[in-house]
Image 1 (cartoon, rainbow, N blue to C red):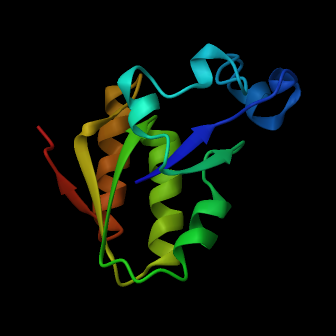
Image 2: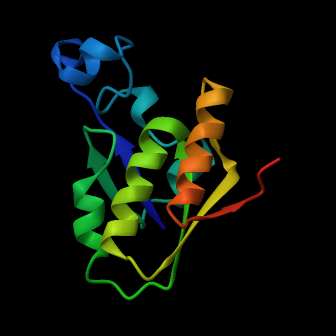
Length: 131
């Protein structure tokens, strides 16, 4: 299991993302930045990657030397971070089956989520539990 942490600093609103998405969130080491509930304790020995952008180049670099046959992605926001990381994972592991589990993704915009799912399917990702 690999966790990517959406990680921002106090100057978030001055960043490119903050100027276009002016909702302060996931400030590093804040309560809202932590893994939620029991997951935080269960994940203490799992790989964690801090990312200050939608997609994580560090995730791609970590995966590119692995021999995984299958990767399942879950997370939020489906039409921003999930799709960005899915493309990076696909680039790092082009022969792996990339699975998007729709029971584990969410967006504040259902229409954009459906568009993101359609795009990921078009990029040869396997979509499960959609609907």
